[in-house]
Length: 221
Image 1: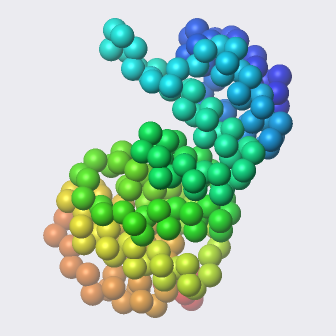
Image 2: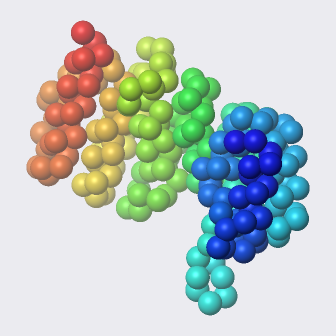
């Protein structure tokens, strides 16, 4: 994603440029990851030029992407990398945006930042869009699939302990399933033993448990 392509996407499309034109969130994230500090300056310029919105809820009840918020976190990453996003995780208005960008940063530093955030979570929200659950989902995305980030034993153990805590406090079956999916990133004998001993009443949770068992056995072999 180069400068001209991003600018054209914003200026063209069926949506007004204030709503991003034909640009989507992934376009901006990819641009920030590729272009660094110079890309951050361009994001700031486009945001000011087109008047992107910080609140995606319009007066008539219509929702649009709050591109000014996305611009803030993407520009922060362009200038300061993972450390800049980690600082934004403590901001309730920016945390979910920062988490979404971290999910695209396939590095140990990103995994560590998300794990640290999750270690302080209370997991009491039943809403999967809550920042706590979004961070766990981001870890699953970074660790549990082919080509995922490789982490050391210490970070795996932190992830395992955090995942078990989240599972114990998950108030909905689909949240428990997310925990079981994420535990695949902690491919340790301790994770394997816990999954083997775990009894689940929900059929979807049991399927997630079986899949996690297979994944961890494969990684340990």
